[in-house]
Amino acid sequence: MSFLLFADSMSPPLPSRRTALVLSGAAIALLAGRDALAQGDAGKPEDLQILNTALGAEHEAVAAYQVGAESGLLQKPVLDLAVKFQGHHKQHIEVLAKTVEKLGGRAAGPKAKYAFPVAQLKTQADVLGFAAKLEQGAVSAYLGAVPLFANRDLAKAAASILGDEAMHWAILRQALGQDPVPAAFVS
Amino acid sequence: MIAAALAIVALASTTAANGPLKGDPRRGEEIYARCGACHALETNRTGPRHCGLFGRRAGTEPGFAYSEAMKRSGIVWYERTLDRFLANPMGTVPGTAMGYAGIDDAQERADLIAYLRANQKCPK
Image (cartoon, rainbow over all chains, first blue to last red; front, side, top):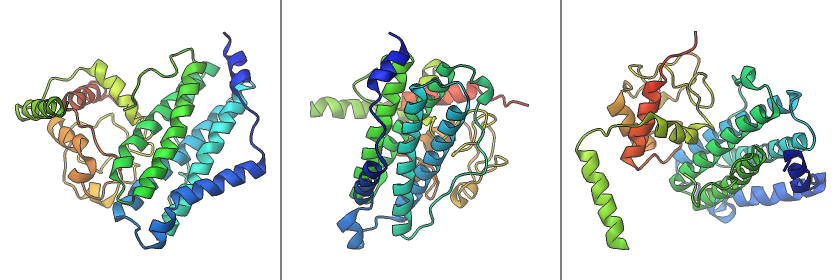
């Protein structure tokens, strides 16, 4: 089956601006830790560090998808899918940054420059493979962060982002003709 | 079930106590994929690059902004120091930016370290 056909059938309409805002608000409520933070249960200083490291990786993911989108190698509807995933990472950034600030920290911003292996990206499959590796790494990174949070609301929110990254990874693997769900567990 | 789990933990502890395990770089490459959100072999990303790692003092890779904790750690990266750090990054270097719980399995750490050892040449 052609991936383009697959992507066409799998790609739902992009959310409207209003839907995105509603989802964003719900996510912020989730990640902000609501009652726990209001009660001063802001976790430990390490929580801030973990959030900021995640924020740095999310900024890098947005930049990577931008490279893919501007490469001229992605064709519709694959391009739409990449932009959609990039939009998710932007929402993660919005939520993570607000949470860092709510906890009294300074949110990490994007780097001025990223070093991506652009010379190795020659086909659509190369771009998808590159994105899949980033998403796989993101799944592992969040999995490694979840048990470290002192604030359990933050752990719950990180697990929510992990689920989103795992969906990205699975769809990208499917697009590449690989088993989308290669194992019963992620690591 | 619980007894079996405890036996596995005991076995892992015994293995670790007997010294470094022999790593398989091919399996290590698969494990290295877990690091892909933040690290690459040849370029600094959210985390520092890994080529040229062995023998390098922690926190000294040019062009990368390390945490103060890593710069002050005094660690020099070899098999044994990597094994300890990878088992528990935040416990080994409190204040490190690497917010990751670590790799519990000693064999997986050995495989990962073997992969890193096999990919030490940095591009010119």
